[in-house]
Length: 398
Length: 142
Image (cartoon, rainbow over all chains, first blue to last red; front, side, top):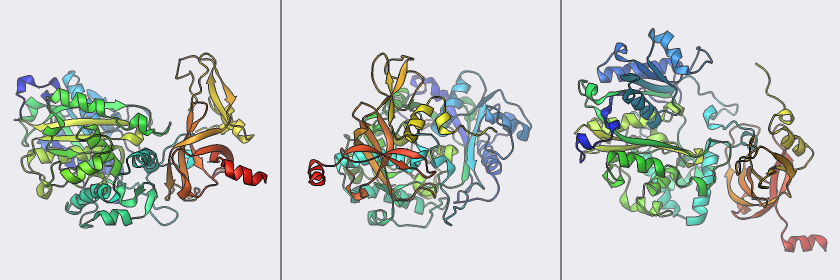
């Protein structure tokens, strides 16, 4: 790390002490409460802590059971047999979940927060015999749902303008999902493990879903859970695993998702402010990031985020990434676990999977996907089609 | 659980939908700044004025963006269909369908006009179709 402890932003007094991901699959037996609990317990084990050490919780109650009262995270108190000093229903998890927990700790509201989410036993089979579209991918608004819109289509409305204006080379553009999918194919924990290798031609030959997106441009909708334990850096230093420091982070909310349709000219650079603030807190520049765990809900979003980070000009992202490389051996190793495209995507709890992978990369325990010498990782969430974005920078305690 | 209100009875948007049922496209127009906006809001998002009213739209615009959907989220939607953002001449825009045009011929910037079509539940929706070209109009007149 280039920055000494004294120059760091106050956020860097908070660390991730434990992480865990359960098995991820197209569908899992059991229910969402069970899978969430499994992830939470495993993250506590990873941190060497017990439930007695936890005084804050951020984990929207997924059901079954519980009430309709808010905050839903309080529903966990009955099951876990303990109360909390702080609860947060942060939506989504991942970067915002971590930042809210860090804020509560820094504000003296609690000392150790368990953040977790996921789903199981919910993936129905559609009437046509195929997999039903996950409910969270079907926008429910009177000016959106009536048209048969879906998450992929909302993002496609943004990507289509980009393609129209900049006419990126399709083969080079398809190299982005092919590379990330190859990372997932090599990750034994990934839902798409062993399904590769993928070439750009495979992406271009997959069936269209919502133009310009084809099937292999789009993320999974799978089941599983993820969890993290957030506490003070001081306390994390006493835990068995190397602490991972929260160097900076931020969110940006342009509009509510899936109400007014996303316009490229409004949302193409959503997240630029969150990035600026995050890097400012960390005293770092995008060039300092060793590993990128970006929200790869589709091909275009990965390209858009590199452009928004300032690595290249608008419209040049496809060529830039083809030359720089986003594989494990590239200049910008990206979504080293296979990302949402090939590892797993479990709804609003899913972004925490990216924190799990970033923490493992910084600890040096990422197994076959390890990028040697990783000290700084960027984790992002959401994107242009949803009209909000968020980021967190994580680093080693050195 | 109470049933959700019929669309014509919705507090803020009932007038919009009941007018669609009669084949008339309305838009919220601010009484003070005279600007249009969409989706309907309690106050004008341009100037904050609480007084606005639904006024008829001339129903013409251009395609800002579109996507051909090949895999619908629910069975009632028959793919492929064209989702689009249409920028209206009066300065507002909406999510809609492009109809009466082969999906492969839809283009960004294409001039379109409103055409009321039944949605999956049979109720009318304000979709858009390409404006007849000057040539096409001349042929039709001949």
